[in-house]
Picture 1: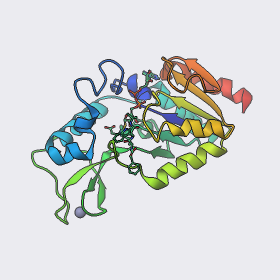
Picture 2: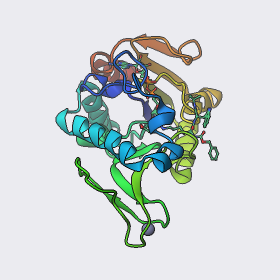
Picture 3: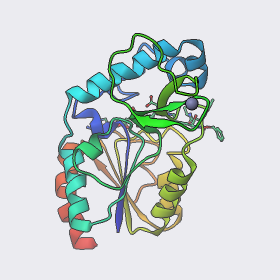
Picture 4: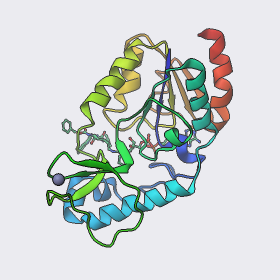
Length: 229
Ligand code: BV8
Ligand code: ZN
């Protein structure tokens, strides 16, 4: 069984800026200014607007060959879990099932006061959305300093301990606990293949580092994997 762990880099070829590459999302912005509970407390409308902009970008692009290759593997290998740090929903739009969104989703909102959550696709906002309970509604996304959805994270760690091969695509492996996922796989003796045009903190420890873009490497990686699995 194989699983895939993805970061912002897999959506780069679709036209969604990554976080840390030049022209990245955080250029001109500090994550702590827009992706923290404190930022939302300080200026909820500004934070909502940051995410509504990202919704507009995500709506305007399409999944790329990297997303599609993974969706095809799921047909071929049935349950290829996709553990993603991304919130853009492009894996699902490419047809992937079994997607674990460990940092939440751009397409969901939740109440700051009660456990109300709902799908949400608006891209314009005049005034702050409120829950029936009166609480402020916020993007259902994991911000810096917030813990990740426990069950999803636990499931991700369980999966990567028992598979044969984890393919890590398009992440700088800088953000924890997401960056601990490939390390957990390695510690469990799982083959870890990293696909990235640049080396990262994982590259020296990965079983195999394949330098290249997701859309170029993933489609034929499955042919090479098939021989070994
Ligand atoms: C937690 C959702 C504590 C939001 C994200 C101080 C204060 C608070 C916390 C901390 C702190 N110091 C450290 C921490 C911990 C912090 C952390 O790890 N910080 C780092 C800076 C050290 N972690 C957290 O805060 C986490 N929570 O620790 O809570 C706690 C603990 C217990 C109980 C309560 C609380 C929460 C982290 C989640 C933050 N939310 N996203 C949003 O999206 O707006 S993080 C966000 O950034 C992404 O989700 C993703 O995880 C990360 C971006 O990383 P990547 O995806 O890797 O993207 P990046 O741009 O970095 O890299 C792109 C890669 O793609 C590159 O390698 C590039 O070469 C490659 N690439 C480019 N093109 C291609 C490509 N690859 C393939 N093909 C291509 N074509
Ligand atoms: Zn509520």
